Image: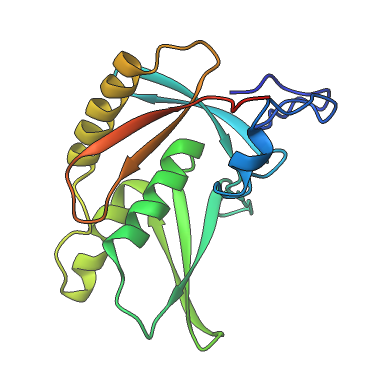
Length: 181
């Protein structure tokens, strides 16, 4: 996690005047672009892990809902468990108690539903589907993953790539080392 800049917002990369590490330009072709700065930084406690996160979650406020996020949902498609997990993680990490899910068809809004963050995993049940996910199982998986990373990421300030092939249960961790100068 980068230190906050003058504006108090931490970015995923250092100050603009820092030069790239050797080989970083070549590596950047294979990695997705990262935003230069996050909207805000949050501390998130997940079991024994205290994490500092850069977040771009937009949080809204009004008289009835002092802290709420907004998500769009295409009513012409089934609610995917991954979508519910996304909404839940966004709200949980940002400590936002509610989400307003705006339902639309072909971009035309048909209504919205306000859910408490703890209701998100069970939201599809209202439409006859099984719960999207079990928050306890997500926490257990995250705990195991953080233990793995803690045990295997040994280089201070090092960068790593975590890879899991589709359909596989195996995760591999590769240290990203600068190439030759």
